[in-house]
Every structure is written in structure tokens, then in C-alpha cells.
Amino acid sequence: MINWQCLDFTQLTPTQLYAIIQARINVFVVEQTCPYPELDGKDTLIGVKHLLGTHDNKIVAYARLLPPGVSYPSVSIGRVLTDATCRGQRLGYQLMEQALHQCENSWPGHNIEIGAQAHLTHFYGKFGFTPSSAPYLEDDIPHIDMTLVKADS
Image (cartoon, rainbow, N blue to C red):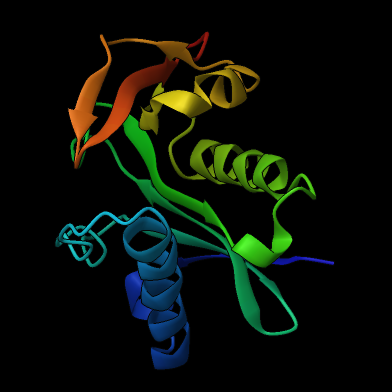
């Protein structure tokens, strides 16, 4: 069973913050062999939420939820990851359902934008995201912007 928490930066314990940074570096820098500035200054901004999925006190899923105007004009979801030991168990689907729910709670009715790795276009499409840019390279990885348009926005 996964325990979900959605916290502001100031609510994170030092242990949680360390685990988040470790998980993000493990996935985005080590696994994807992509050296890039993981700490981009957005984590601490007012309104940014950190969605943690934990099992046995270990972060197994994570996403960063950003208010409008931080990464995109709309609300955005980024740094979406699942721990390598838990893949193939549909945890990514649970994570996105939680992320979308938390975004709606925090910023009701707002469109949501993501910068998706291009090979995950189909995955995000299952949640209603559609491509909103041409493919582009970010840190030598093909990406595409995608948007989830809310009916009341």
C-alpha cells in the first residue's frame, strides 16, 4: 500500500527532502545518464507542491506540482518518477491520478502543462494530455510539451 502526501517545501522534513533529491538524481541523472542541474530553484518557491508516494518509509513515487507561471503559463507537473524497484506495477498511473487530483485541489479548473519525454506521449495521453509543441531536445532527451485542457478554463 502506498502512502501519499502532498507537501509544501516548508513542510518537508530534512529526511524527506534528502530522499526526494536522492530519488530524482537516481532516476534523472544516474539511470538516464543525463548530467543536468537537478536543483533548479523551483522546489522552494511559494505554491510549489511535492507529491510523495512512500512504501515502508521509502519514496517509490514522486512528482512536483507547480502553480501557474513557474514553468508554464498554466499549472504544471514535473519531475515525475517511480523507483526502479516498483516499475511494472502501474504505480505511474497511481502517481498521475494523485498528481491530477492534487492539482485540481490546489488550482481548480486550470489547464495543466507538462514537458514529457517523447516516448511517454501515449502514457500521458491516457490522462487526457495532448501534444502542444513539436518534439524538442532537452538535455539530449527527446521531449514534447503536452496540455490537459480543463473544460471550465
